Image (cartoon, rainbow, N blue to C red; front, side):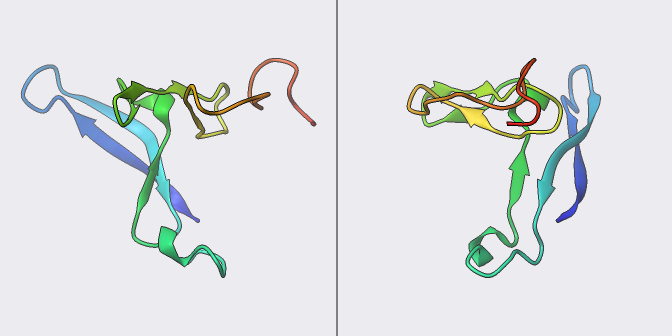
Length: 85
């Protein structure tokens, strides 16, 4: 896994720098080669993230980068009390 990426947003209006907004796998494990060359974004570190027309709910916590939609059934790790399961 390659280190976190940063993003400059709002370059014309109210510019801000968002650190550690995405990560990548430049040399993924066997079976996951399609991930190479792509970025994965933490939905909770951007203003909004969408799958199609649906706005996602970011997975709780600072570690996970999950995008939760109405089609995904929990429970989900990351929130209080979910460490260790």
